[in-house]
Length: 250
Ligand code: MG
Ligand code: MG
Image (tube, rainbow, N blue to C red; front, top):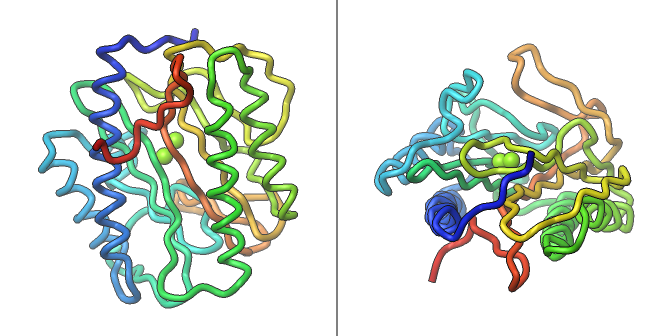
């Protein structure tokens, strides 16, 4: 069952999302060549704690950190480590969740480390564009396939691969609620109703669609080792249109 968020739940989700956005604001400031993914994780942890929230990912299915850090060909679920330092020309995708008074915000962003080559710049631009094309369809009266199709159309217009095995999801009292949201058309005619909250999260690849999970049982990478990008917002369908919760509140 897909649950509809009440006014009070939406208020708390906006607060959780604001804290997630504060983490991303900080990540944008501190991502630079030489910083380790463990240092990024520590910073994220402190931002969440300072704001009296809980790091949603920490301990989730046994995940050992506050953020997922996925570099270049890594797509999602990379584990922070003091041995992994980003370098000039890398893309690092950082995914983070915060739980505030029982409600969750979930958002990922890909960051350029220094100057990127043109292919990586285009990949980042396309994936962000795909995210917002999907967000725009998160309106009562549309169906889930409208979001999936909007994401797919942007990916296709750039001739980029689309990760098939992972996608968006309902979010609220836990990080993963119903429904699952594909990043390409599957014909899902589930009607979007007011109060539905979904994390929309395209993952696009410079090369093919195929991905595989590493021996650590977490890190997902492209099979062809070409770079991937990941952009995600938590979005609620409201009578006034899509409400992104994972942004800074004015
Ligand atoms: Mg996420
Ligand atoms: Mg998510």
